View 1 (cartoon, rainbow, N blue to C red):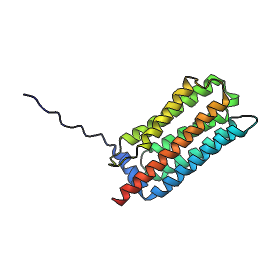
View 2: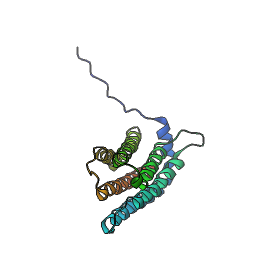
View 3: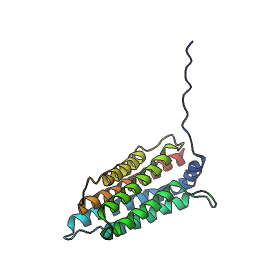
View 4: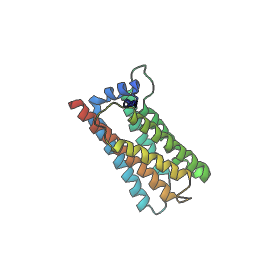
Length: 197
């Protein structure tokens, strides 16, 4: 006698669901925030491509500035006495990455790439976990792709793929900003569709 296994229902985190519901009216602002991060990431790539002397200090400042936007998303998703939302956690981690990047000239190279890589992997994991625990039927594929790209960039930094090449490291961080921006655009569009239903 063969028993058919019941289909597994995905685990849904009630706190993430509540946070997403608080973000639904702000779906347009999420798209604008995502576009802002894409512009900041593109500006960072342009700075690295056109600078005669390459420094990670302006890239770190751009990353810290961008982290404020993600922390703002997390703040709006948080209940008054509720737990810290995934976007707030991710924004705080991104701020740490910005601080590490801005102080990169003061840190040993191996310490900088290890701290930055671990922080990016943590931020990507927080975003990926938040995405997998959402009950939205029409999830945007760009959200988990963006989070996975952040994790991959963290792995590349930890393995010192870019070596001591400041331009390559800066471009990886700028690419991470663009990926985060696309993830927020995807989240905003997904919540906008959810709001219409």
